[in-house]
Figure: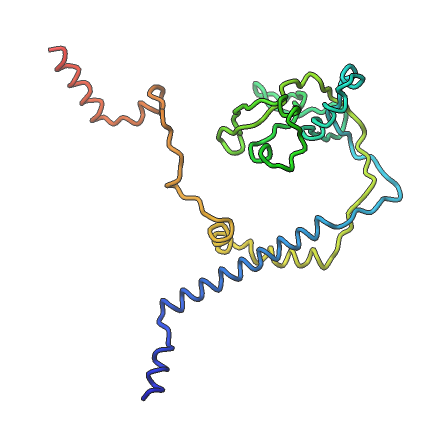
Length: 250
C-alpha cells in the first residue's frame, strides 16, 4: 500500500513533463551557445604566421598628424589621441570612391571618412587611454544613427583640423592558419543553434529578452500636418468637425 502511494507520488502529469522538456532544451541551447563562444575565442587567439612572400591587397587610408602639428612640442600629445580615434578605410584603388544613383544615373563620388567618435560606455571605461588633459579636447554631441534608427551620444574631437588623410598600399605580411577540427566544431554547433525555433529561445533566454510589437517606441510629439495625418481621419470625424464649425458660426 505504501509502495503504491510513493509510486503515485513520483508520477508526473503532462504539464510537468512539458515544463521539464522546455528547461532541458533551454539548458542545452545555453550550453551549446557558451561552447561556441569559447570556440570563437580560441579562433580569435590563433597566432598569426608570417608569409614567405608578402603581397599587396589594394590601398588603405587613415589619419596622420599634419606637418605643422607633427613638428610641434605637442606632437606626442595629439599622437596618443589619434591612436584612440583613428579610422582605417580600404579600397581596391587610390580613388576611394563609391557608386550611387542620382537622377536615374549611376555616378561615382568620394567616400567620406572622419575620425572615430567615442561612445558613452567607452568614455566611462577606466581602460580608455586618455588623460584628463586629453579629455578636454572632446565635446559631447548627439547624432542620428541610421543603423539603430535613433539618436546616440558621442564624444567628438573638437580640433579635427590637426589631422590629415594619408593613403598607403595595404601589404599583407601575415596570415591566420585554419584549423579543420575547430571549424568543424563551430559549424556543427551553429547548425544546431541556427534553427528558427532555437534562435527564438536563444534570443529570449540567452541574450536576455525578445522584441515585441508592444515595445515599439511612440512619438511624444506626433506630426499634426501632412498627408499621413489626414489619411488617419475617418469620414465620421471629418463630418463631426464640419458640424462643429457650422454650429460655432451660427
